[in-house]
Length: 65
Length: 473
Image 1: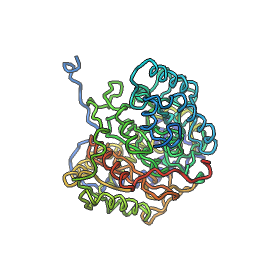
Image 2 (image 1 turned 90 degrees about the vertical axis):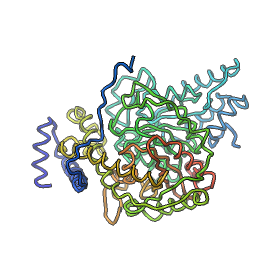
Image 3 (image 1 turned 60 degrees about the vertical axis):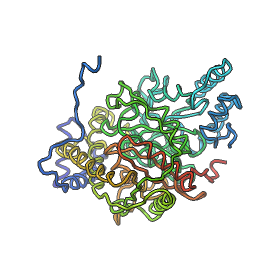
Image 4 (image 1 turned 180 degrees about the vertical axis):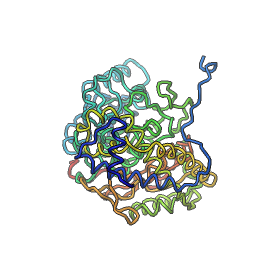
């Protein structure tokens, strides 16, 4: 990651979260791990396929009766 | 045949003895409560013992039998549940200090009700990793849940108390949950059977959630037949859980002795092999050899699992942190330090990562389903290694030193990510530290998982050996 400290400050402020200084090293360590996972995801060639795993299926109220 | 009041009696043996009047439910439950009282200080599997309720339930069963009523398939069998299941009268603590402020549950979780309806008797609630974000069995609030085979070692998590209680003879059946491996890691490290059913098979109603997209619930047991009996009692649709499938009960117990004959079994190599130590690989080889007489054994690589595991990590991290966001804003210091920083990081992950994870998850499902054109069942190690010592922080994985807590379930995560049914079978020598083998099938084919688990047990390859540890004597 680039400037991870700056990212933590900006993103946490955006969601109304205060990251205590004592918690920051752990947060940075887990952000780095998540970034490695995201890299693995980027390496999968999905092309323009936008099929998400969760699919919302509206209920058929006629069947529910 | 074990004495039905022995801590090592199977659920099937106990239910038969209670149903026929060879023993009473009260005697079985009193013996189980006495064992918990004697051992729990050393193992720390139970956080709550519901003795009064248990004795009341047992008395009702004995009265019903005396009145001529037929009892259920789990009559008088003691069971306990991970403390994320609602139990009337207890705050659903979910391993968290914060949750102890919750009002006591006013009703039981659906699966607790179903176990009771089958005649099983609830004797308590079980230790777990905070908010289920754990593979170790360590908990800063409730203490370490220790491995009955060696209390200096981890029980595995997050269903730590479930695995440990069942292994220690403190509950022939227990219930747990699995979002990334929490039914499989403790089963493997404690040396018992577990079943993570297909995503959506069993109702989660009345359980405290972790990751809605990935949460499963299921049973632990010391025999494959007990696992099947419990699973059959738990099945059935439930509109109270929005993801519980509208499927009729598909009983597995009647076919559990069909054996592995005619099945095509694939042993996973590649990425799975690279991330497991020799002992874990030897357990899989032992299982494959035991099945080879009847089944057709082949090998395959399914290296897309690495991306599936990454998708599971990101979905878990972001979805669970969003769920806990308010608690993280107001009570971060009340979290277990071992979960807090990971939750905090998850709360600020880029949305693009979470969205891509859901796309990769679907892609990985397609890759995995393709494997079932050639195989009925897949085998893989449940964990990279046997139980680490309590307090260990790192793990050597595929030539790299990695953080232990998020990594112990690396081989389990790919399958919960796409909701495949997986039975975990204990494959280890008596007196040694346990290891487990994952038996993975296509969606809704729990019957195959259970058949293979039973075939391994019948062949003597999968046995939930009693712990030799002095802590249990």
